Image 1 (cartoon, one colour):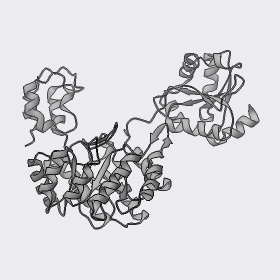
Image 2 (tube, helix red, strand yellow; image 1 turned 135 degrees about the vertical axis):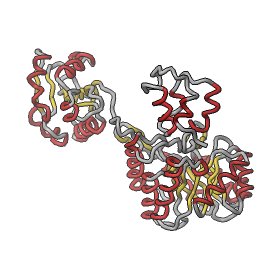
Image 3 (cartoon, one colour; image 1 turned 90 degrees about the vertical axis):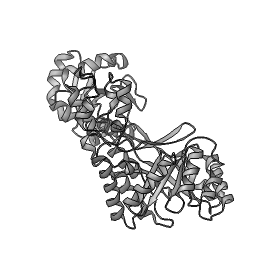
Amino acid sequence: MALSGIQIYKMLPKTNCKDCGFPTCLAFAMKLAAKQVELADCPHVSAEAKAQLAESSAPPVRLVTLKSNGYEVAAGNEVVLFRHEKKFFHMPGLFIRVGDDEAAAEVEAKVAPTEAYHVDYVGLDLTLDGFAVQSVTGSAADFVTAVKTVTNLSQRPLILMSRDVAVLAAGLTAVTKGVPLLYAADNDNWEAMAGLAQQHKAALVVRGNSLDDLADLTEKIKSKGVEDLVLEPVGDTLSQRLALNTQIRRLALKKNVRALGYPLFAAPPLGADMAYESMLAAQSIAKYGGFIVLDHFAPELAYPLLVLRQNIYTDPQKPIQVQPGLYEINNPSPEDPVLVTTNFSITYFSVANEVDGAGLPAWLLVAEAEGMSVLTAWAAGKFDAEGIAKDVKRFGVAEKVSHKQLVLPGHVAVLSGELEEELPDWEIRVGPREAVDLPSFMKQAL
């Protein structure tokens, strides 16, 4: 049973050392009781207290990690319902499904492009996470062949999908390394599935027709020694799935229902069209999905899902940044212009992509602005003449170019006079307000 803040406080050192980031041990205890911090944040708690507080300090949603040959996909350890309350920690894994009724050439045609696909998005390399192998024929031999075909083409984590324990057991013989996810245990096969998962140290999907059904199954399976569980609440429509996912997450976080404190699984029914699976995947990314299966691989399907996932699982209180520095675009020479911008990722890539796409060489000085956009950083005092001048010197701009000319973003033209005072030997030019206008400005004015 969860402990109250006062009960937790009695087990803490009560020194009010502030090493945890809170002014008092009582404040930390209250946050720990509310699942908003971790016990590890207190460096002075005794081993005895750690053992007693293990239940209360455990995350309300268990962390489940799939592994394979150096790749990992983790879901769980979430502590809030809404990202603005703190942030979400572990992005859901996206898996492409193949069936054992598909010929080897068909499987390869799906796996190879999925394996090679990646997107450079504001400096981040976005990829899909693994593959799900579905038993369609019911044949153990066909299932093993399909698993071997996938593992020969990819080293990424696997989900093995069959309600037949014998088929899954056969498929596991083809998985030589890592921790796969087995699908699925239900009221009819849970005991045998639990035994198989325990034997192979695999994670296990639990499929239930209701929340009570799921809670009952997880308790029974956990009693067999299987800790890494993933829940699939059965819903016939998208709205039902959404409601069930939300109820499960709310019960785990707000009511501390441990039997439902696990990541969630989502997969379209076999034969679903791409429109349905894209809606299911997007809904699951936004609302608490942990491991998500897709039947189709296409860049136009993968890209928006990857970007949606990245946007939701970034820290809303911390802008995405690039490293400040002097960047080269299109192999610039010492005679080419020096453009100035901030280290907010979207600002950087907007400028860099416009200049690069136009085939124009340039130096891009990315100034430290704590990840803020140009106007925001200027208004906050994080993008000013003094800081820009320091970065000009810090990154040795004068040593890279044969001229002394900087181009400021048009939105901060007001800084030009101040920057000339900071850099009296330099000529300060004012560029356009929008990145899209940079190519024409560079061709006409520089």
